[in-house]
Image (cartoon, rainbow, N blue to C red):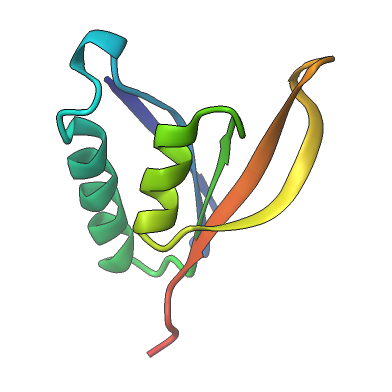
Length: 95
């Protein structure tokens, strides 16, 4: 599993390259990693987490929605000329 974060100012973190090997999928590793990343962002002056996901990756889409992410837009030809992506986000309260 690999995760990298690109800090854009201090208000937004873009999550990239987070994958779980297929042989280790559906065991909670991705959810644990994502929850840890969300908590790390909550402890910093971050207002939004943004990510891109292949709409055909149903398990990933379900996990992101379960943790509160919302679809922002469809990005045509994101991965290739015939593969789109959803941009998803999770906003934090300003309290």
